Image 1: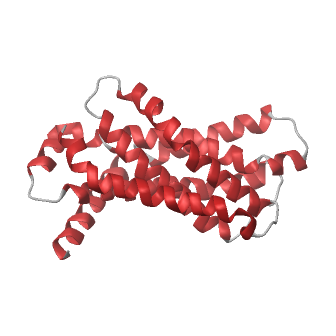
Image 2: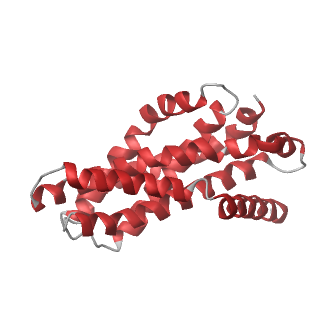
Length: 224
């Protein structure tokens, strides 16, 4: 277990070091999301009530679309300079690679999503502040990352991975997005979270299922 944790920490540190030097994932993803948000601010001509009611769906749609930039890059980084082959030949558990990629993608998505909430609030002149958004966003982003890394691994060695990734990813991610939008909307409307308990349970189950699938199947996926 100690060796696994050390390996996991080293892989995460490697990914964050690369990102700090290249700025290929988070900044590109964030500015893309920001551009969409600004465009929609000028395109959508609705009153404050309508903007408030549509906030959850709009923010998560922007996050999902922008997150594709992260998924396109998260595994592609390993193909550069034969890094993928080095990982496969190294005496390390490949499960640690999956968890490292998922954690890296999660932090990118989570940071961007938490920034989008106050930006939307300022641009659209609606109040979206709630401490519950911290753990709701965490559940949504972890589910997105855990599934996204699996699909990204499946398509990494195909020439059409940029096309195949969203085609395979979006249909499967729909239950997660519906659930996280419903829970987020419950918070925005001031309702109690008990009314969204079914959607919260769906979020948790989705995270458990795909994290487990990733841990179990990543070894065979990356070698195939």
